[in-house]
Structure formats: C-alpha cells, structure tokens
Image 1 (cartoon, helix red, strand yellow):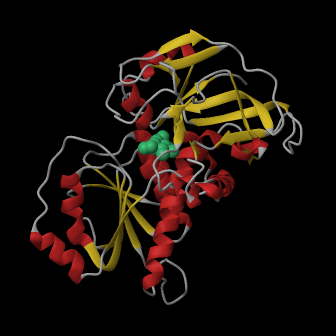
Image 2 (cartoon, protein in one colour):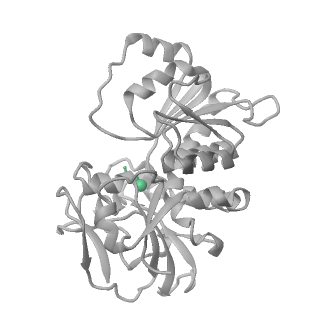
Image 3 (cartoon, protein in one colour):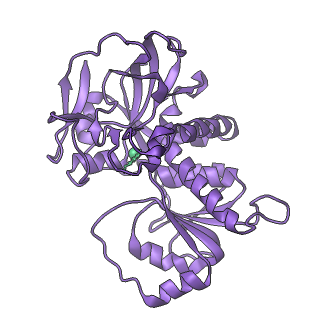
Length: 357
Ligand code: BGC
Ligand code: ZN
C-alpha cells in the first residue's frame, strides 16, 4: 500500500510502498483511510524544523499524518464498531505510567513519555490502511464523512476552551442573562485553527473578531461572514476584549494585543513557532497582575474532546454548511503530497489528501 514517510530530522517526504497491515486481532480495527489533513505541524516535520519529531523505536522512517478520517474495513474480536463505520483516530498514546495517562488524559501526560501518531514515536495515518486499537477510534456520523477530517484540529480547540471554562470559574464570567453574549474574543490568526476557534466561540455566544496582518482572502471573507464573525486587520481599531486567543505564536502581535484585555480577562496560547524575539517589560507583567489576567497554554486533546468536536461539526453542518465546506480549500492525490507538504499555498485553509472514496 502507499504511505507517505519522513525521516526526521531530515527534510522532505517520500511516497513509498509499504506492507499492508495484517487482519485485526482482539480489540483492533483495520481502517481504510479516506482523507488526511495537512497542518503546520506536518510542514514543521517535513522542513526539519520540528525538533521533537522522531520515528518509532528502532526505525528510521515515520509515517506522517495525524489528521485523519477513515472507514472501518475489518474488526477483531470483542470490537463494538462495525465494518463501514466512519472513524477518526486520536493522536496521542499515553506513557502508561502517570495517572493522567491511565485515565485517558494523555493530553496531560506528566512524564512526557507519550507518543503521537505521525509526529513522534508512532506511525501516522498518511497511508491507505492502518491497524489500531478500537479504544483510540472516535465514531463519526456518515453525514460528516467529507468534513470529519477537521475533527482532530477541532479537538485541540475544544480542549483549549475547556481550560478556559475551567479557569474562568474563578469569577462570574457569564453575562446578566447567563450567556457569554456580552463577551468579546480576539482571535489572532485566520488559519484553520483560528477559524475553528472563531466558530466554536461564536457558537458559545461570544462576539468574535479574527485578526490578521493582511486583508482577508476571498474564502476567509465568505467563511467569516457566514459564521457571523468580524475580520479585522491588526491595526484597524481593535476593541477591548475579554479573551485573546493566539493561534499565531508571534510574541510581537501578542504584546500588542495584551493592552486590549479587560479586567479578569484570559489569554489562550495555542500557536507555536520559533525564532522571533520580543522583550517582556516589567510594566506588562504589572498590567497582567493588576488586571487579574489568566494565561493558559494548551496542546493536544483527549478522546472526549474529539467527541465534542464531532458534536460541534454536526451543529455547524446544519447551521453553516457552506462555510464548513469552504474550510477545505483543496483536495490532492497522495502523489502530490511531497510538493504540497513543502509550504502553504496562497489562499489555503486546509489541504487534504484523498486516499479512497
Ligand atoms: C496536533 C496535536 C499535537 C501537537 C504537537 C498538533 O498539530 O494536532 O495533536 O499534540 O501538534 O505539538
Ligand atoms: Zn496538527
């Protein structure tokens, strides 16, 4: 079968022939891949920039890909899923030792000895078939077959928002009418994650403003209009806000927006990059203290977050099907992967690889 492999820390990808997986054993499922998504993490691995990328033990190659959706092709003994079910696999597999990993919260692994499919120590899903344990599969309704590939990135967003709801219980953060309708969120970055945050926050009642250094592309304009959020250029009169979500990882942008935070505000740090430097002044720290600002970094997600991601997708599939479809800006064949994995193309939101129908 065809697979896309990398050899971290070496740059580049190859489309190679690998052995097809065996029939599933007890508790296992064999999945035929439908689509895999490409994200910044994949490109970081392909360009040799992501330092923690590594193949499975005693191997040189890693099958790339952590955003995936597939169809169950065969099941092993004791499995409840059926042939034909549509599933999304979770990415992180626990260390087996710490308490968080033992209760399915490997997204909070304490030892750091977890593996992540397609990223570090565990083969990913950019291949025609994969064999996996049923416990790592999230069932997706068939009507989400074409869009369910967004479940994985969305699961990360759901987890980050979970942190926010938890942390903001320190104060009364809901409005007089019990909703979040009086709250404003600034989302830095209009990539797939920025737009998924925007959709989720606006679903929860927030007024959302997506920010970028440039004007919106045509697709971005259409999506933000349909989901009812505003797109602003960074300098264009950004209003005061209760929440800043950073999906870009740029310290200068973040420092520019911190003064916009209202009292008891929150910052979600999500985007990761490297290189850019910025000075943190004592005055900024003082401001954060004086205004009771909470900041939280968030990565990865548990199976529960994947399931809640599927719920959001089902709601959006009814509310703004067009915007949801527009999120996938191109679908390419695995043969084209080595090229599209090199860099983001102009106007791209999410590029997906089609493995089967
Ligand atoms: C993935 C997460 C993963 C993270 C690692 C993201 O692209 O969606 O599952 O934990 O990369 O930094
Ligand atoms: Zn990713």
